[in-house]
Each structure stands twice: as structure tokens, then as C-alpha cells.
Length: 165
Image (cartoon, rainbow, N blue to C red):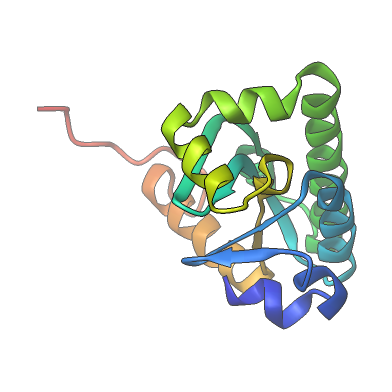
């Protein structure tokens, strides 16, 4: 996810952690990431809760923000970026208000993983983070047209799909 490092301010990128190709931030930084992405003209696709510990990563994939379907609405890019940023922020804040994310994050991991993390000097609160995905207009446009091409013709009429086997 080179978009994060390329387009977000260094002070935002430096607060995140990169594992594989995924950036994640402490929960309190996600609103800042959303706003920075919007200012950089990037689409906030959302993400999910993770516990990034020394023995590995536990993912609470069911605790997520997913604006992808909403992003498929045709509208000018700037309007889409602003609308999706608002939706992502509202969804994320709703998660924080309705659940104890630290408790939920711990449910995603095995107790022995916690014990190893703590034994290695790790802090469970610092391990709690949210992976966040972004997309630029070029990537989104490619994906949008690919998605549309699979279900409808240029004039909007449905494309016949082969029967399921």
C-alpha cells in the first residue's frame, strides 16, 4: 500500500505500522488518517481491528469499516472522496461507541499469544490497532470499470451470466 507513504503526511505515516502490505494505526489516530486521506484526494475504503503482537497478528475481521459498496455510486471523484470519508468516520466512531474494542480484539487471539507478547515486554493496549485501506482515483476507476464490465453493458443493460454449474 504505497499510497499511504506516498500521499499521507509523514507525521501520520510515522504513527502507523506496516506489516506485509498493510498499514495500521492506533485507534485514536484513525480519524486523523481519514481526514489526511481526504485532503490527499484518496478514497477511504475502511479496514478492520487487529492486535499486532510480537508473535504475530490477530485479526478481528468482523469488526470493520467497509465503504467499498458505497463507493460504487457514480459521482464526481471529489464528492465521492468527501462522502466516503464522512461515512467511514461515522462507521468507525459508531464501532468505538458501541463496543469495547480492546476486549473484542483480545477475543480474536489465543491466550498463549497474549502471554508470549507480554513475556517479550509487549503492551496489549499498544498492540490494538486498525488496519486502514486507501485507494486513489486511478485504482478505483480501474476497479469500478472492471466490476461494471462483469455485470452490465455500456448502456446499462445486464450482461447474461453463464448458468452456475
